[in-house]
Length: 105
Image (cartoon, rainbow, N blue to C red; front, side, top):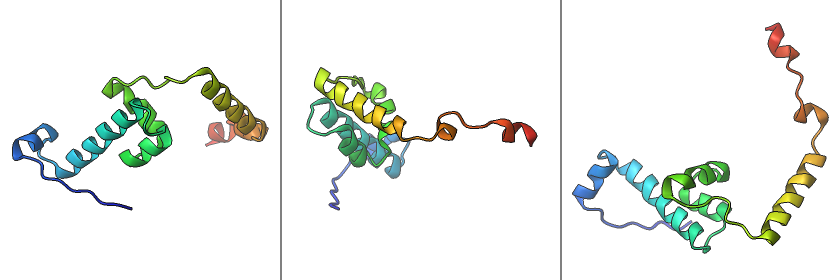
């Protein structure tokens, strides 16, 4: 893993409520969103850059004005095949869990 550091002016830190940790997280997310938008990173790689799970990354893109579903037809068909394959391998209990155990407690 590579660590990159840079100086951030004090007045810029104010926009992050003075939190260095928050500034780092937000700057990583902004960079990840931009590189994803430019097509330079996949959603998984961009989520890794942001330091968050892919699903959370995709939901946060709206905060940066980035279209989450900017996929072409070929990519959409691939994703559909992958999802279908995944769903076929799930057991019925995973797809429709028995909620009676929750009602008994």
